[in-house]
Length: 232
Image (cartoon, rainbow, N blue to C red; front, side, top):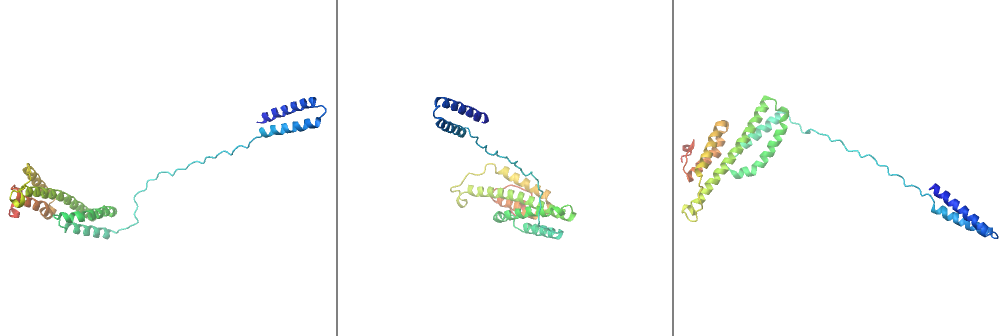
């Protein structure tokens, strides 16, 4: 830009000399014309101020931190044992054979079980608390297994009822279960395994699976371990 200004000044000087030679009788007019030319050249070659450079600020990203589980709730050892006892009594006293009761209660039992699993952690190493929590876990495992088998037995009994027709008369009867023997044998085997593996929960196993087998035996005759206990 500085070189352009110099070139414009030289061009203006040349024009002054030319005008002074050609207009020897009118130097005032020549000087006025040169002043105008120099002013126009300076305006065209004016240096524009540069825009301030944008200063890029470094972007700081917070470092990824892993936070462990922290709870503000504190439970003493007695509180944990009391909650375990109450939960165990509530579930054991319920009627596991009542599917509607299980549908309504199971979501609340599962939420409470998740809470107990969290609060029992500080005392899990103690023999008394650890043993009690193991009993609660075993109880829920048995409950899930008994519920599944009993639901299957109820479905088989319902299909057998529909296969007998309207009020057992054979009218509008549906198809029978072709492999009913396989189903009854599998359910009877699960019943025996549950009694063998979980002898402390025999009353609840009899209440669900045992009674379900007895009800199904009214629809279809088959044999299982304690079939005569129900007088069928």
